[in-house]
Length: 113
Image (tube, rainbow, N blue to C red):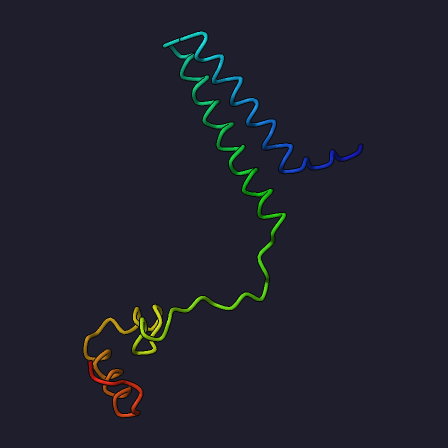
């Protein structure tokens, strides 16, 4: 038994978009306001979502992110105390945060604002 090859993301996007368009036209032409109309609308939304995800996968596959990307850090003036979010989460006590600020002032790394 042979395995089927996985379709390309662009093919999936085109097929899903055409299916969603066909369902949308069908639901507009039929103008059903019963269970069939709701089912057509839900299938249209599902196929539109699949098309969007497939387009996103195709874009990501064409332009992959570098594996060794540096961590995003803000400018030094936006982070005046040299603390990141994890450190601030650990220092939920005001006394501990005040101690860190005092230590920074003693080392000369922080000017009073």
